[in-house]
Amino acid sequence: MADFSEFARNERSGWADGEIADAYNARFGALADEAAGELLDMTDVGHGTAVLDLCCGGGGLSAAALIRGAQVTGIDFSPHMIAEARLRAPEARLLEGDAQSLPIDAHAFDVVLSNFGIQHTPDHDKAYAEVFRVLRPGGSFAMTCWDARTPEGAFGLMMQIVRKNADFSQPPPSQPGLFHFADRGTAEQSLAKHGLRLQDHRILQLRWRLRAPEEFFENFALGTVGVRMLIASQPEEAKERISRAAVREVETRFATGDGFEVPVPAAAIVARKS
Image (cartoon, rainbow, N blue to C red):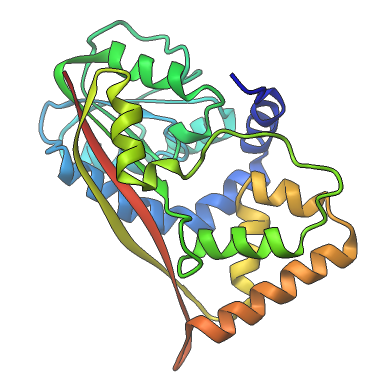
């Protein structure tokens, strides 16, 4: 296995930072809430469903599942995110813990959901093995991940801008595939290794509506961990190149009559425990 230890340290310290966590919730929260509703629909979560919200973040999915009558447990490694989740989903059972080693009994849940979270674990195999362990036979696992396969979407465009304009004389830390599950074949093969049979794979057409093109760069520079740390490590001239390129691309591609509408596609995946 590749060494993702530095990635793991950065993720833990980054999401424990209240400033980053709050910026993520403010800048990505509406998109995450829309995706959460899709996951709940795709897995038929309703009254009495035992749900694990894995990497629960600020608790948006947990809160939405509670409204549907589910019995909800949420877990996240960020103390700040857990504190936010307690405010948003006070009736959920919320735990601080590691998705790769869950403090939960086997066969405890009908449904395990992870909304833009599980792919941030350094060892994906351990995390998916834990999903299988805590699911009941025939239970469902559903997750979302951002789709970065094309520059016609926000994540793909930002990754392209960074590749073209950042200074990589000091390479960033190795990281696992954060966006791989946007490809249906990759998702199907990876989940099958852990006894999870793909049931559905669809691309959600989420969107940012921005008042100014600068907001696009700010969303990534303030509301993420990986891109924020990469930008912060850059020389000033490289930061300026990235920022200017982002503004230029948004103005060229996404202008509307009264602002900018940026596609933020995301994959929603459902699998069943065999």
